[in-house]
Amino acid sequence: MFRLFSDVRCLDHRPHAGYPEVPARVEGILDRLAPGWRGSPPPSPPGLEETVAAVHDEGYLGRFERAVARGDLLLDSADNPLSAGTWRAAWAAAGASVAAVDWSLAAAGRQALVVVRPPGHHAERDRAMGFCFLNNVAVMAERARRRHGLDRVAIVDFDVHHGNGTQHLFEERADVLYVSLHQYPFYPGTGARGEVGRGEGRGFTLNIPLPAGCDDAVYRECFAAEVLPRLRAFAPELLLVSAGFDAWRADPLGGMRVSEAGFEEWSASLAAVAGELAGGRLVSVLEGGYDVAALPALAAAHVKGLTVADV
Ligand SMILES: [Zn+2]
Image (cartoon, rainbow, N blue to C red; front, side, top):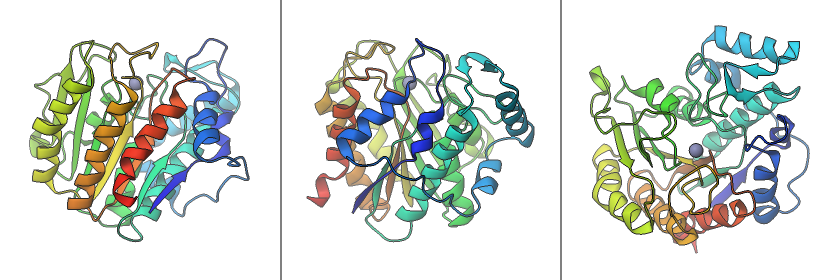
């Protein structure tokens, strides 16, 4: 069974003109995949604040809330402009992410896509970065660990940028596997092959840095040779996906050459592994992707891949 999760308040983050992370990203995907989605916001999941506080410092959350209330123009970085609705939008995104995890873990065979913004994977425990304010996928992993008692959660991140925030949040832990394929060297500068986790978490971070210009065939080989075997060895009880569509061949920020078929193909392989190992439980959350015109078709290809086993 497949479900989409979102929250109309994600549109309320409205930075200055020319900023690439626009409300139309989410609007376009939902208009294509869930016509009629513009309704009342969903109720906040129980214990959402506690789950977010497991990821982000109290000091950072207070600083973020006050910056928005004061009407500050930026938080921490020039890549993180604020608007009056940014705090509300970031919490709506985290709330929809948590609701999707709660739903997916209530029964076997449940896949979900969370169509939200602002994205999350660059957000650090104590700092906004790279268009990201709250680390949605990290919040999802903590939800699964703390509220649902799962022992092993895997995150696969195919955004063209390395998810520095997600890596740093879990790199000293063996209970959350983080696997990233990304353009390298590139923003944000992290994600070298040698970053494999630290202490107890050594071996539970897998970075697959790739030169600019990689196409579907390169990604296919990386999934087959590295991503899928590592997932099988880890045997997660839930598979989370940081779904950025900026490896798309025409993305204005990324430098890769992936096609629609590429996104569909590796999504199907992730769904198959979730079926083998995690009772089919897979929750994917939107990260980047800045070709606004192409994004609905790319997200549709991702969903087609995720649900191929259902058809
Ligand atoms: Zn990205």
